[in-house]
Image 1: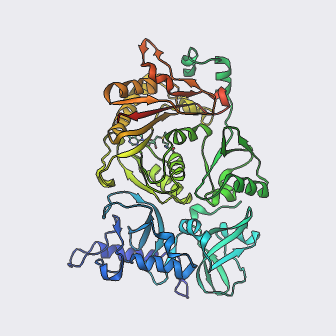
Image 2: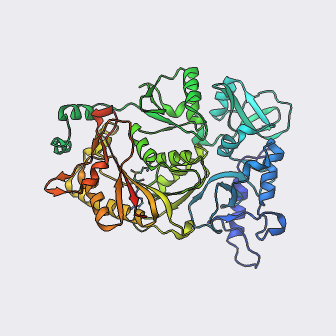
Amino acid sequence: MTDDGLDGDGQGRDGAAARDAGDGGTDAPTNDGQRFDRLPATAADRVVDGRATRREVVDWWVDRFGLEAATFDSHTFWEKGAGKVWAFAGEVDSPAGVEGLGMTFLRTRQEHWKPTTNAVQRFGRAATRNVVVLEEADATAFLAGETVEPGWDGDWGYLVAAHDVAGGVEPIGVGLYVHDELRSRMPKGRRREP
Amino acid sequence: MDPLARYDPLVDDPAAFHAACDRPLPSVVRVNGLASTPARVRRAFEEAGVGYEPVCWHDGLFRLADDVSPGNTWPFVHGWVYGQEEVSAVPALALDPEPGERVFDPCAAPGSKTTQVAALMDDRGLVVANDNDLGRLSALRANAERCGVTNVAVTRSDARNFSLSPVGGERFDRALVDVPCSCEGTVRKNPDALEDWSLDHVEGIAGVQTAILGRALEVTRAGGTVVYATCTFAPEENEAVLQHALEEYDCHVVDFELALKHAPGVTKWKGETYDDAVRQAKRIYPHHNDTGGFFCAKLEVAA
Ligand SMILES: C[S@@+](CC[C@H](N)C(=O)[O-])C[C@H]1O[C@@H](n2cnc3c(N)ncnc32)[C@H](O)[C@@H]1O
């Protein structure tokens, strides 16, 4: 765990929440990590303890990356797995008895929410803040999973790491900016050495 | 004995057919319209010195030079392209889905056609991507996410008795039935494809294909479209499966446009006769366009 409290993948918390899910001893509904439950619209609609709301999720992207709230008008949000929020471009009944629904989008139930690489690639093109545009050598190192020092005087925390390619800025993935360095959060399966 | 020799009576030029089957296949990528455009992909390949050639019949497909490993290029990293055999792009084009529709992909993994269909729908509406193989489904999920697709619901079931209830109970507008097959048409990519060839296997898998196509026809609405595809030449797995569908279900075969050179479906094979309508199905042989082999038919459920 890093000293700044902003760690990447929340693995430990996952385990803790999974134990909550198995706890049948109380009456309050808890998160069932095995199925898709639709997020409540607002805190007033919340039934399952600790579950993020639609409003919080949309606000988070708006606050953090400056996206228009309307970006997500046609998406519904779901939790499956502790804190794992999925974005789905449609409607099905909740709980949904399927293996996958849209894309994994945001990791919640941890102090600092963390967007997924795929969500940043899909929605990060429209971000207007907390985007760090890397020089090509840094972009390549970042893609390989390495920490880089791009020189950034903005916020600490999760940033969209991007680079210039074929005439435009394109997001690569999520970086954690702390102590003057950008730690690549490219998942192992997405790292490459071009 | 080369199992492909049994198709000599069907092809226009058997020598060219066999010669093409022995050549390796160029690697091809399809541009993902949800994330990029053909022009931008070209530019990224040029910036990176990646050798590519357009294909003449589709502006979103590029053949890559032999020394390129597509997975390591920026366009792949960004989800701008998907590695997919050229002929495998045909069924989604024949399906021609519209944004907002409900589409069924019963044998979907690892998702090359799912992602193409989702892109043609502009990521709007619903694609139900089903497969019975958990490992392949996880590859599908990763591929769909890399392409930025969010209109896919993934289910795991035997497509022969797929249930509509987890996905709202409503029937589909279209289905893309890309069944498991004997894969004869993939020999150029995978020279071992024919090692375990047997007529028993062909006949066995034809039973599975018939049942999967039947279920897809049942869960598609009246007037809806069902595309049937294999990457094999055997009429037992192609025209015979269509014949069965025509006999058992209220549906018909319809024509579709295809700019690749192709041959019509066959109506006579090993003593069997098939309905003339199966001639509207397309057979794509490797020597026709220097691709893999493929079979594709478009059906309409009676309104
Ligand atoms: C030709 S591949 C599909 C390729 C895929 N459509 C694509 O474009 O990437 C056939 C698939 O059918 C699946 N399959 C085989 N038998 C099945 C069954 N009974 N029900 C559902 N899927 C099945 C296999 O796991 C395999 O992924």
